[in-house]
Amino acid sequence: DGWRGWCSDTLSRALVRAQRAANDIDAIHAKTYQNMCHTLCQTSEMFWTAKARREWHEQNRIMLENILLAIRQDPGRRVLVALQCQRVHWLEPKLKKIPDINLVDFRDL
Image (cartoon, rainbow, N blue to C red; front, side):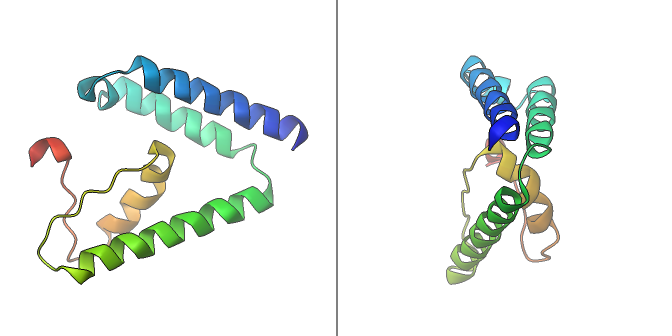
């Protein structure tokens, strides 16, 4: 909405350009890219309205529930989760706190 929306959209477009430039797995997982991504995501969040922030957290909560449902439906199986990098910053710490979940980088499979 207004200037907040413009700032958030501008940062989102910058992130999309960076994602397209990082055109292979090693580039996307490089520390420089991850730091830049995290910085753009955090800066973008500063411009969200309270409503947008609530909706984003609700979407994340639903994703977390769905991931846990998939894991618990078939114990012992691996589950691959692919999602927007901005969501990783929120979901990964939550998943790491769950004792029976072991997060593994897909390159280590």
